[in-house]
Image 1: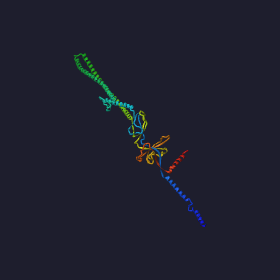
Image 2: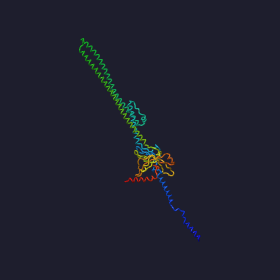
Image 3: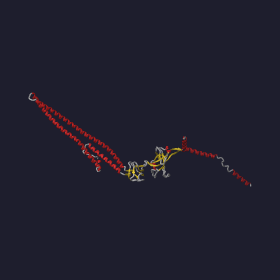
Image 4: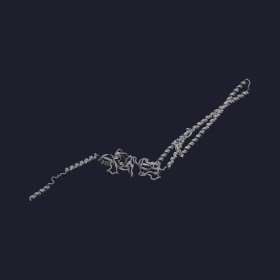
Length: 449
């Protein structure tokens, strides 16, 4: 009995003393845990306020060619005769794309060619007249067209005009020369009569002197002497008249020669005026001919660069294209590619030229496609209207170096491919990321009335 009681007491004491090794105060663990928590929070706060994180502006973008799409236009417009390409077709630089109807342009070109050849022949004829040549020396390029009946007619017309004008001018001069010859013959006759009268006067004066001597001796009568004196006076008058007539005739010769000079001078001046006018007209005609040939050359529209036809604006043969109207759009195939990013207006203050940018090709598998690095080379000065009403954005262009493109091995980059652009605008701490929106809100709130 006592043995069982002793065992029972021992069991009761052991049950009552089981909690004695357990610590009954919780301050130690609590302080330790609080210390760890404060340390962690402090460390995080220190890191958040001192460690800088990269800051970037995110924008959507697309790959574009450096020169953008090439719009094929026609300066004068016209009627489409033949469309030589189709959408999606790859073309080379200089390859014919469209041909226009040549009927109207050909007629206009022919008219300008005839005007130009006519003026060339006119100048050749005027040069021959100025140099008093026997025939016209036409330029070789004009003679090479003699197989053309119209050009041959131009040459023959100028030859006939040259002959007619030369004959007319010669006839005018010859008439005056004939007048001079006639007057010179008249002068010859007057001079002969004058010499005869002078000779008669000499003889008469001798006879008069003899009769005056005889009259003094009483051997001659006075009437005879007076008659001889009257004859001598008359002969002197005849000599004077002949002298005057000769002078007048010579004066007429001088006047006629002056008229000949005037005819030649007037003819030379007319030739010079006609030559200058023809030269001016020829220059204008040459310019119009060059323009007409350019128009004819442009009847065949050629590709300005190698590329792919992405859109035809005209599909019908016989369709009318207005001056300067779009014919088709080409996507250049050899232009350097850029990424054109669309930056929101609220982010533009952080974006500028020279900033680095990370590019992710959103259309490709992100696990296997590496990030490509580029540099901002252009930022638009003003916003651009988007496709959606009220949508506005700034355009930033990012250049990618060849070594970065080489990282995209096996990936064919094409214009129009989308990309996500991360423009690195600097570095900020986590605290600045959190506090900045709040400070901006407070700043706006305190400024409101």
